[in-house]
Length: 438
Image (cartoon, rainbow, N blue to C red):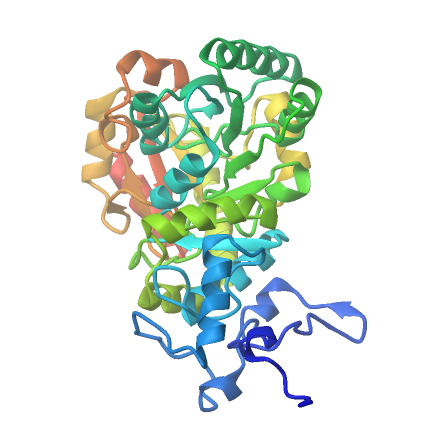
């Protein structure tokens, strides 16, 4: 009898060795160090120091049995997913390396990448809800996120209950109980708790630990807590450490960091990622190889860029806080509310570089300020190397009803600023001259 291994039992060679060393001499390597090479073996790509861009729609199987085994994993007939590269709607070398590295930042077991942050959010929600289910979410959310829940999922019998970002544990208990009743009436369940913290654009914080306690006390079935961590991640907040199950990013922002790409991701335990991966396999929406490669480049400097922009924001906000034409700031380094400060102290390691400045006046005064900026660019988005400024009530949150905006504090005099890595004194000079026109 031959001792040869049956090809069907032999795992397909991967693009990288597993497991990889993530410590030296008993010291765990920092995420910023692992960004330089984790998940990639140059020997598998002709010795190329950096991963090449793998522009291919499909991958050749080494034998038919391996192809069958991969598709058993892709289709869910066998646990564990594909053991190799199959088809670019499912996976690819650049995407897999990127997902490995993203998972490191949040201490996650697994990560998935998408063609945009909203694609990530939409596929995540669709994978977790059924007709009659209820989503509990914090407010405010990014307008497109809130709109998807309220306007799109509602077409399929999914409803929602929302609560303000600063809700207490007692208020959270009541919200979840109300959602349970609503789900019972609809013949469904509370399927997901979706958070955004800090909230866009007010910077209001959600107490993740209190949400988990309320979830565990009131729900007796698996209900994931997902959180959009775009404003502070991956450097200044690790939500999985505080009770969240899934962390969501618009990679367009700080991770991409150069305002030259659009992408999104989610990360968490494999049990939460697998259903989303299965739906992504069907619908598509995986990030393309070129964008994945650009994100790998950006991850190498994300800590440096975010640190610099955070230092700049602190200096800029110190100037703005004392300016006579500024009514107030929504900046995490200057919190007035003791309960919000408590959440910040427990959950955050930095104040970030995106904040709101409230101009004395209304829309006209805010527009004059924005129109006279020279270094800062008038554009939506955030987290890039350049400083950006926008007017949420008239731009990103224009579709939100006026009464909803008023309830959430999205006022006509709110200007959102994302500070970049320019010289801080130059930025202060720019804000100073623009405020002269108010």
